[in-house]
Length: 483
Image (cartoon, rainbow, N blue to C red; front, side, top):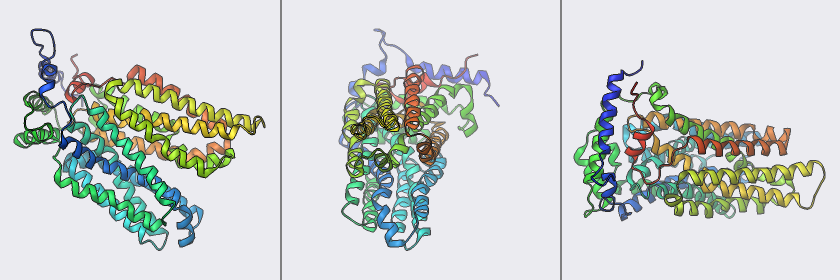
């Protein structure tokens, strides 16, 4: 049932009232930006570090199966089919975790949602380490997947809710940077230690985060949502510094939260009302385009791509493991200067170019042309793809997801968007090998087309959110109906 128009108009009026201009016609919230803790305090930096320990776990979980594959199969005597189940069951677990991620983060708070996810991951790593058969391997991988599915939502949301608006983009993009580091280091460490030791090492960042959660503040916006006025102001002061003027930011959070509380508690079906259409299209659309552009298919099956092309799998996979790191660092540095939309479009253009180069290389191989050059072109194309992906498409969709939904709908919306991402990832990883058997060149040309579509989607529908508070973004994205 739709909300009554008069209720919508009342909430709209309440929200828009916060946009009063001063006598110079400049938003009052901007006038006090310098005094409201726009710089990164030690607490914000430390809290972000603890949060992105979960991002490292995410990357380590993705990277574990490649270096562990031969050791697990030899030591436990499992078949390739059994190992394929082990590799893919993490995605199933992640879908389960993503399904309940928003509700768990709303019910327990951002900190303890991260804690619950890390407990799941630690138990999963230990189950793998002590495994003596396929069933315990699969159970451990499933538990890690559940934890990762929850982490993929709550980490960027927590960082977005604690950082000043002028730094939010760079800090939230650290999620993807640490994911890339976790992936690369797990691959490297896996070349010198056995699979059981690698699983034990996987517990370290989880334990670091579990301990660190006792020393970081809860999200002030989550506290405000539940009416904890003293606690949310204390959390905000802790994050902005004792000498910072938090009055404007605290007032804006409180008043916007109070206005939203005039609406019923957000339910899943409420997401599909017209007032949330723009946010839903952007959040779901960018996640689908991210995955159907080939992301996890190329990463998961990099070895088979290089082998098919006739290029060294060791050199190729090693280079791919580190390709995202420098561009992820660059993204962190320039995010809040360049903006979300330009980086997303440049990233999509780069992934399109990388897929075109790779597809063209396989096409030339099909016609027995340039046999000496095509393996190198495949290598170059995949590096261009992976580097470009790390610049924007890897992390920015999660940042945008954490920004565009109002606090009363963030739990339901976060669960849906995360589930869409993981389900799309599963589809791509499942059909990738079938597509490659059909046509290697055609597979990458399809990915290139989707990357081209991503450029248009971002240009037309994705909002630029740099330099705005979450409340300002949500007033723009989700205005109540005024029919």
